[in-house]
Image (tube, rainbow, N blue to C red; front, side):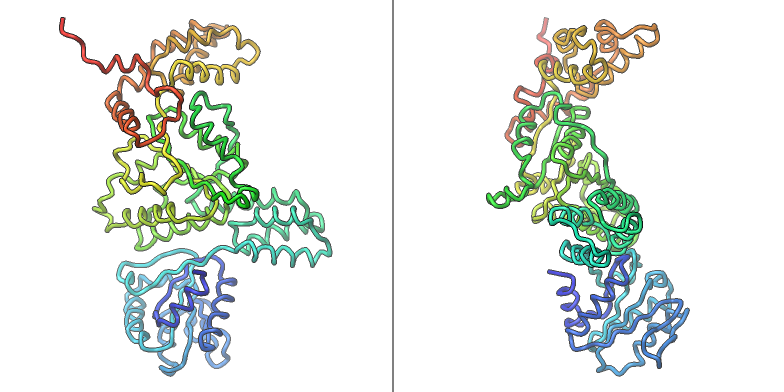
Length: 509
């Protein structure tokens, strides 16, 4: 349902107080005016703190610097007169007891009148006592068709044109920005060289990064990692490579749906986060990193609003990769205790979106502790596949050493015995192998020479791998994956034979 349809439905249903969180005042007011005409030609009265009510000369300035008078104005009109009272930035006054009480009194009366109070605010700020009074409705960012019309309007003003492919790329790059930001960045491009050019896409992307940073919910994450930087995990890499073209128009014509996402489960340091970065780089898609903790706010409705904002922004930036690191920590202990059920509502909104989304947002979630995840997260339909990323086998450790050493010492890679290094580091994760090499470099550097295989082995002997300190957790994950709950990311058993030996009880002497 579009915003206009939902808003008009609330008007007809006589919802007394509606709250619209959006920074796009001008655009939302234009849409509200159109909705007002379609629903019985309602009058629209606009108020702000500085100028009071505007438009009608008889009422101009009424309620200036007085939010309580702004509400009292609603009662001045005849009960049968259809009207919308649009209050800008009114969220700042909702904590006032007189304003709050007046709004609650009005909400009872307006249920039987064709009048609606609409609060337009750049953020959600609803006190608990007004939680049942105000109905929050999201105003979406500009759709591609709306952006294209605006770009073509600006092109018409310059007297120049863009090729269809370049125009589509510019429109796609503008998705996820407010209309004001789009106009601003395109005006900057036109002011720079008198026209819009293909290279202006980079200007738009920089504006988009700035916009995302200001939300403080999503982070625009730069990626340089490649699929080839991942040592081992052949099953997972094959799965990803087969879906490399799944976001293309040719895939849509073939009938393929957009890939939904992956859940990567395994212990720390096995390459789950690296895989998320490599996916975005290989598919040439922007990578958005979500810190789930930032979704939770202290005000009533704020957490749910931030969740909807995150979803709206991710879908506006699609196609993209949404990376959720350590999702098990974010949604562990979903009992709702101590937060009035906010965690459950945020989780419910999120998993419903995972199951029902049709936009090309590829979600990559990583988890270390599968026991902490709610069962709903693991149900089929949330993700395309769940992969278990275990400890690398000997051949995979060899590949991991090769990846790191080819980056650190590409000129003398052949001087390192990769087979010996892989054999002598059982139970090591990819992160522990990287740390071993760093420690070996410190040894060589402190002695004014290059580091050797012996330095690497000495460094390895000083590291106690996580496989030995968290053996029970690893064994649980291995058994869970072996029971058919997840696909193996590697072609070989994900736990080394030596690890299994460590788990076997000693025979009595």
